[in-house]
Structure formats: C-alpha cells, structure tokens
Image 1: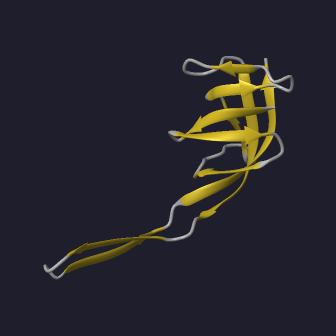
Image 2: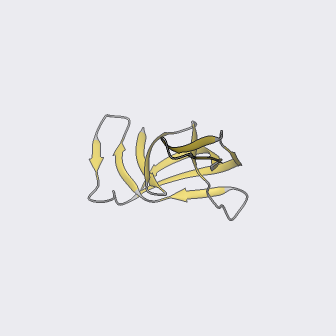
Length: 105
C-alpha cells in the first residue's frame, strides 16, 4: 500500500514504515503529524484511486524524527569580461519523517 502526497508544493511517494525527507515541517504533539493532501492511493490488491485534486477519506500519519540542515548548495554568478563574480551558499532545513500508517476511512 502506498500513496502520493503533496507536501509544501512538492509530491512525495510514501510507503508504510519507510523514511521520508521533506522540507522543514512543524509538528505539534510529540512529533506526530497527519497528511491529508493525498493525490493518489494504491491499496494491497493493486486498485488505484486518483484524486481530482485529492482523494477523499485517506489519512497518512507519521512522526517527525528530526530536523536538520541539508548539504550546502553553492550559487556562483559571473559575467565575463566585466569583473563581476559573486559566490553564495545556502543550506535548506529538512525534516526526517517516519510514515507510520496509511488508512482508508
């Protein structure tokens, strides 16, 4: 059983008891988080439900294990023969989420 979620404007394929790395998520109670924007759902028998835009009655629950910074991305700009060079770095905050269960109501 797996699903495709929309989190922070991006799509992620999730499977039960697997880890997911997403943009930084805020969790309220002990890291528990619930996703309700399910775009596609596939059950154990192979039946696929596609939402327009979301599938109703599907809940994905997970637990935010940690939040950390990703590897540094270097942004370098240059204009030839003008003497212009600019270098800048950026580290995105990401969250590690354990997908606990996918339920159909």
